[in-house]
Amino acid sequence: MHIQFPRTHLPLPDPPPFPTHPISLKISVFFTMVLIFTYFFYCLTGFCDSAPRTLYRQQALEYDVLGDHRSVLDDLRPPARLLPDAPALRNRTVASSTDAGQVDAPGQLPPLSDKGSAPSSGMPVSNTFGTKRFPQAIIIGVKKGGTRALLEFLRIHPDVRAVGAEPHFFDRFYDRGLEWYRTLMPRTLDGQITMEKTPSYFVTKEAPGRLCTLNCQTKLIVVVRDPVTRAVSDYTQTLSKNPGLPSFQSLALKNSSSGLIDTTWSAVRIGLYAKHLENWLQHFPLSHFLFVSGERLVSDPAGEMGRVQDFLGLKRVVSDKHFYFNQTKGFPCLKKPEGSSRPRCLGKSKGRPHPDISSEVLQRLRDFYRPFNQRFYQMSGQDFGWE
Ligand SMILES: Nc1ncnc2c1ncn2[C@@H]1O[C@H](COP(=O)(O)OS(=O)(=O)O)[C@@H](OP(=O)(O)O)[C@H]1O
Image (cartoon, rainbow, N blue to C red; front, side, top):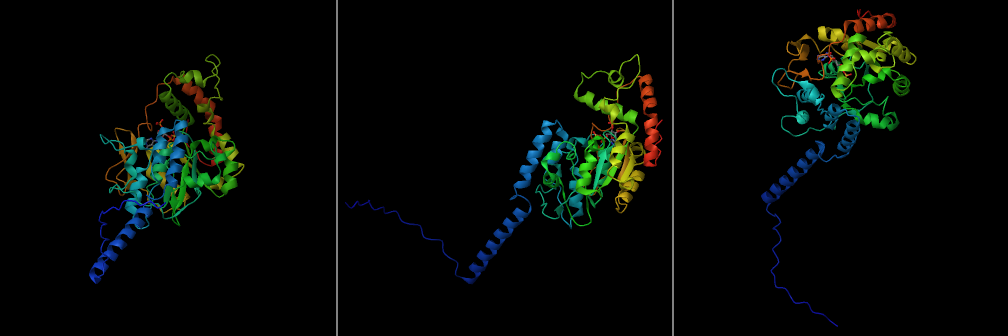
């Protein structure tokens, strides 16, 4: 049977006229080219590239689990942008990609927002240039030594590119594999140094062997600070997260009557620098280490930065002119970093007041650390002048 559909009599729209006139043809070609260029630019600026974002999101979750929220902010940002001909843009990103909550301008200026790394146009600039490389230099310690300050000061240098968050690869996440680690790294151009900082590497037994397996030529920076004040700083941090924490004295001493120091408490153990260094020296020669004084990083940041730049084989770019002493904070802060309009101090969790600890307990700790400090001075060839 032949079914006949009723005929529709709707008029079909006329096809758009194809430009046949030479001028119309040129205009249409011009607009097509503009469209194509816009699309390519769009892709180059990373909008088409979803893979890295997924990775960053995944890493953010891991850090969240660890409660390292400040680091998450850093890693949630698209990686720092790098255009070979745009140093101002690059430095703007570098300066602003610190732990968001950690970098405040002095006075009333608010801390940078999570979105702070985007250039002023609001358009993320591509991170397509350069290569993700394993770090040639790592700040391996010590916790509460001043590692964040050192990394942020180094990031002013145009030839240094660093991960903002602590990757914790050689201690916590080693089973994720080297490619995972490499993906976390910022892209660098030839001649630029890739860096990261994870202060817990210094006290992790397996870290030096693992790092040497990857690259035994890695330069190692250790920021050391008087182990007594370091322990109090460590305690202050834990107390800020857990206000119900027992007193410093009860944690530092095995029992108050004996006055013996409890070396199982991590805040005490981390300060045994000679012991940890011994472990590292099994894998790396002393010449691969630079020991930075946490105290001098505060009293003379430019001087200490000079040593660091020399050690890394960098031109001395970071100097006196980059620092000012912020009276309110009581610490050196960065003057306007290039590409940024305002000065920056580290955030509230850096350089915070310590609780009062009895002078007897502090003296007990000083006595305890003395022989370890002496040994450390001998090993490192530097006298840090701790009591
Ligand atoms: N410029 C500047 N601004 C602020 N703080 C400074 C600076 N330079 C060094 N420091 C000292 O750094 C201490 C924190 O050390 P870290 O950054 O290594 O801590 S962490 O291990 O990453 O948590 C931190 O310890 P606390 O004073 O106990 O907060 C500071 O004393």
